[in-house]
Structure formats: structure tokens, C-alpha cells
Amino acid sequence: MNVNWYPGHMAKAFRILADDLKGVDIVVQMRDARVGYSSINPKFEKLFKNKINIILLSKCDLADPDETAKWVERLKSEGAAAVMPVNASDPASVKQVKRHILSKAAEIRQNVFERRGMKITVRAVVAGIPNSGKSTFINNFFGTAKAKTGNKPGVTKEKQWIKESPDFEIMDTPGLLWPDLENKRTMLNLTVTNAIKNELYDPFTLASEFLITYKDILAKGMLERYGVDISDYTLGEEIIDAVCEKKSMKMRGGINDTQRCSEQILTDFRAGKLGRITLEKA
Ligand SMILES: Nc1nc2c(ncn2[C@@H]2O[C@H](COP(=O)(O)OP(=O)(O)OP(=O)(O)O)[C@@H](O)[C@H]2O)c(=O)[nH]1
Ligand SMILES: [Mg+2]
Image (tube, rainbow, N blue to C red):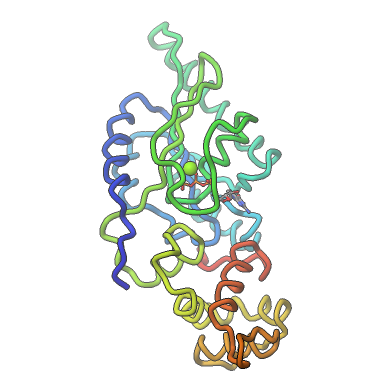
């Protein structure tokens, strides 16, 4: 798969982020709870080394809750200051995280005040891969739609600072991938979860690869949603044909409408209609 997943604005956004970090205390790393490994941006580790790192596992409403709990434990044991699952679309879920972030910010302010007698503005950055829910999180954090959101990668093109109070500011950033993204499985994971532009792929090829790679994890949802037992198939293309037959998804002349069916399966997965599914386990 030879596609351009690293658009020009990302390289620029990385440079801007690196520059802005000087005045930043807290980094909120937004990862996708369904793909805990693939949504780690390897460039972040060095970049955020000296910051207070809070890791949020977003879209937790779409992921298997037991698996998310394991991710939280694992990431905590690896040394993040805090790890929390979040449904960024749910104000109540964001409120819990907000409380935590603001209490960290208050701690930082207090420390600086005690050491230097200065009242500072604490700054936080929300960073992560495209479409992970950064802007949605920020909007629910403030209770207003200040940041533009959308169900496709690359909606936020430029950084945006938003002030909570004179004490605290938070910055929304464009979703960032990394230029040397070559692992085939990572590409698949990021495409089915919509972090990489889908226009770059043929839905039939993508859905076939997805179904066969994650056959075991998807079997229950596929049976419930489409009435097809996929456990004995060895080719994703055959699964799509079976769903077409079962659901009478046909084109003129009675030919299976595999394109429409593929798009439907991907849309259903993304909307949680195949169940709460974690693709990568901790
Ligand atoms: N189910 C679910 N949907 C979410 C969650 N967070 C965000 N979304 C949806 O995911 C899509 C992307 O959200 P954005 O907030 O625009 O994502 P972003 O990280 O800012 O994306 P870029 O600006 O492109 O990097 C939107 O359709 C949101 O409604 C979540 O926790 N659960
Ligand atoms: Mg955004």
C-alpha cells in the first residue's frame, strides 16, 4: 500500500508543537482505546519527555471495557502521570478527566508560587493521532464548540489556544502521524479506525483485510449484525460475498454489491454496531 498518509501540514504542525512546548507544563496524549499500540505516536516520547504526561484512551465507549482496564494498568505501570479512559463525546466522561487535569494544574501553580512567589498560567496541550477525539474533548472540556470537529482525519489544521481562566490554558493541535509509518498492521488499524484517510483505500480491499485479520474478534458481532458465521472462512473476500448473499446486497443483474457491503461493514465497526471491540490488547 503506497499512499501518502503524511500530509504537508503535519510536518509543519510538528515543528510548531515542538516550539510551543517550551511554555507547556502538561501534555494530554489522546490515544484510541481500540488500538492502543497503533495510536502511539513514536515521535512523542522524546518530545514530551520532560512534561507531565496524561494519557487518555479515547473512544472507550467503542472498546471492550475489560481490555481498556488492562491498558490503563499497563500504561500506569510504564510511568505515565495518569491514564484514564474517556468518551470524549460524553460531557460527563470529560468532566471526570477535567477535574483531574485541573487539580494537576493547581498543584503546578502552587509549587511555582511557593518556590518563586509567582502566579503562573499553567498550559496544557492535547496531542495525538488524527481523529482520536482531541477537539471533541476540548469542546466538552469547555462546554462550548470552540474547536472544529468531524468524523474524518485532519479536521484540525492549525493549533488553537483556548483559555479556561487566567490560571489555565489548553491547546488543540492537528492530529499527527509519523513519516516512517510502514508497518502493515498499523496502517490497517489506523485506517479502519479512521485515523488515516479512507479515500486512499479501496473499501473492498480494506474490509477484506480487516475481516480476515480480526476474524476471531469480529465473529460475534458479524453473526449478530449480519447473521453470518465468519469463523470458518479463510478469505475476507468470501466473507463479504456471504454477507451480500445473506442481506441481499445486489447490483443490477444479481451481482453481489461488494463495494456497498464493504463500506457498510466498516461503517458499522466504526459506529460500534459490531459491538465494543478492542483490536489491540495490552
Ligand atoms: N464514539 C466516540 N466518538 C468520538 C469520541 N471522541 C470523538 N469522537 C468522534 O470522532 C470524530 C473525530 O473527533 P475530533 O474531535 O474531530 O478528532 P480530532 O482528534 O480532533 O481529529 P483531527 O483534528 O482530525 O486530528 C468525531 O466524529 C467525534 O464525534 C469518543 O470518545 N467516542
Ligand atoms: Mg481536531
